[in-house]
Length: 459
Ligand code: ARG
Image (tube, rainbow, N blue to C red; front, side):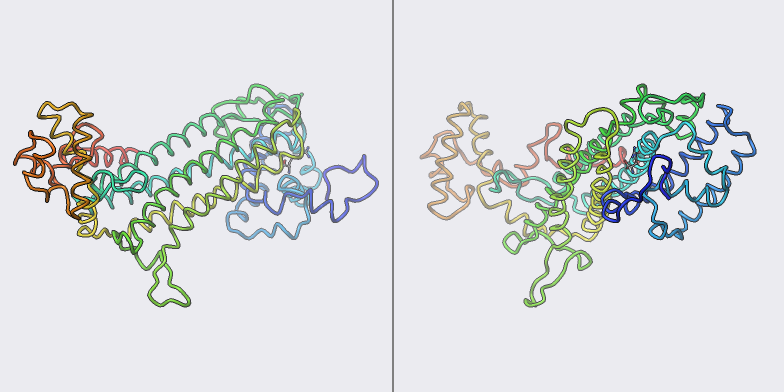
């Protein structure tokens, strides 16, 4: 049943309904629409529009519907209603007759949808934060399981300097921590209630907007009715949180895909998150990781899509804004799935420490060390860098590691290089010397891991 009758003589066409109806996707806000309606019914009592009995009857009916929604027993599609707001109103009118027809007094679907969607975003941002905490937990456990494992660190995908695997885990932990605070910021900003702003200009009924906001768990009411019904920044911010979070996941996935490659051979992934090939019996493909990487495309697309939809829209509400939902719903869903599968990947992952150690020993990842050694002997760093580069060329020509050059060979490059250079070039020493805060030494990483466990426990 349409929410307007008086002004119209003809019915909407089937094609118009297809372009216009949002119930096929906005039914996901059913719980929020019902909670918002209960709060509104109380506001109407304060405004003298409903008496206590009427409010109680409306609330009981709305709560009965909420129970069915939560049980998953409502068939939304059978109703033919336009959106979740008209669906709930039609349900009330069907059950309560004229009383159901009173609820929309002083309210517009414009403040209603803005309220519902803010509540929906809040609920799902809390869920995503929970998923992020679980992933951090999996990451820190994975880090602890691999205590002391040394692997090559890369720049330009070239072996650069050795790092602890735990240090790599803690790098992603930092990103996840920022993703969580980004969600907190987003929630803080969206935490205002549009309810009581009407279609655009505010409502004439004394519903007490402060009280409405408090009942719905918002920090307070939105301060401008035109802005309240037309703002979708909060959806954009949610999409940015999801996009940045997915970008982090995709980088972690890419690192692990590379570490898992036959060429690197650093990792074992569990059977639970990999698949085989229909043709090549030897294959074990990192599909879960590839999808964590691949699903970024659609999530970034949803952010871009809504930015373009919102650009240049005149105040206040326009139907274009109904396009805010499908992308956000999909982005939340995909990000949620990727955070969960990320935890599973980390839970079942084991590092082949002989392979990572061997790789860290190759590729002249200790060349910086030779330069630093010369700096210790009073040679200017730029000169030391040059000599170390020449040592690499010499070792490359012989097909050996730096530490396999003899003292004579070293001394032909610089007389200050002596026997005591060899302990400097050892893998353990290279790692242990990076002992300033934020560095990869065993001591720093052990301390950081402790601090991060404590941080996680407080979340
Ligand atoms: N389904 C609509 C949406 O999601 C609800 C608001 C409709 N308001 C209106 N004036 N037609 O945006």
